Image 1 (cartoon, one colour):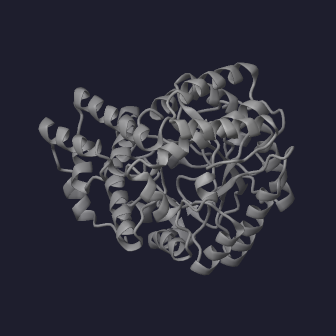
Image 2 (image 1 turned 45 degrees about the vertical axis):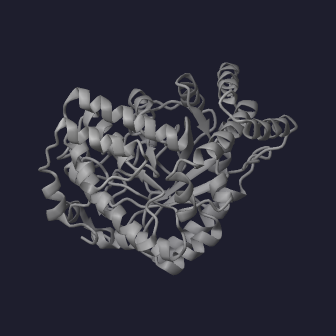
Length: 464
């Protein structure tokens, strides 16, 4: 598999580190410096509870220093579960007879988006299966992005569409960039070649290098915000993290910038997949917490994404250990969003690709974040201001992005409170806003008050 030296990764798995060595690595992280693969491996080797607490404290410090106390909110929009691939762990596998196939029309995509806008969402991750024709894929994706941006609810529109879709050529990626996408997200699933080939038995996805090439093609098309990640549980999670960090090193060396985001989904049961219900390499919640914290310390400038695969309680913990973006009230089947619907964990219609664990509404998740002192953010300012790729990294690495993030997050929070929040959430939100104001300098406070006055006058979507 390209970019991954398995022998080197395996050698790192044998590493054991003393407390003194761990303390030395953690001191480096507090200077916001990226870790080497060996240093990351040392942190992953830790099992002692006292040392783990030090790792967690360092991860919280790094996250808050770079990004502040804000957590970006987004929602996935599945537009098609038609797929030409057969992956043993996925409910969308082409040979899965239990899945009812659906490819939304552009009008249906717009209607689904309007439902999300009514609930207060402003950032969408568009997700689709891979059809057999690359031209068909690209035409559909471009039309879908345009449909999402065309949706409107009382003047509220989607600010940013990120996409998680099939690999494409550089020319096709250029078409998507022209359509206005934000981050292109693609998961390698597993960086272990033997496991990859065992689990991906048919379709274009059966070639592991095809997905690695997609990341390169996106960069060549000048889509400089790219998201990557493994599907945890397919192989040894320590191997996956170190191999992915090796991929990150390749991207930094080749393009001068690493991934904008890293996702850490854990495998969950999926209809029609015996493998998904009994993964070979499950990891405990404690191992998962350590993994997230080590990622935050290893690539401090990168956004870490947490999906609703995880439980509400665990997600509330992980936003303190490095997670900076979370999804809310996800539905993982095309057409899954319904007005005034009551969704339970037992509604199989809404669990076609995999099972979900955090069933809270957006308002409930916002409330949980506010109670923990986090700022729920619906901001897309960096994308609009071309703070992407290397420009974003130049601001994120030394922690200079935090000032802008705090102000923009507070503005989007006020918009949400005014337009969508229940009274209890509104009260909690304004209490947090007042606390956050005390931490701004004079110029920042003046800018915030100007934005707030404009929000009160009906103006939306302003940012620095």
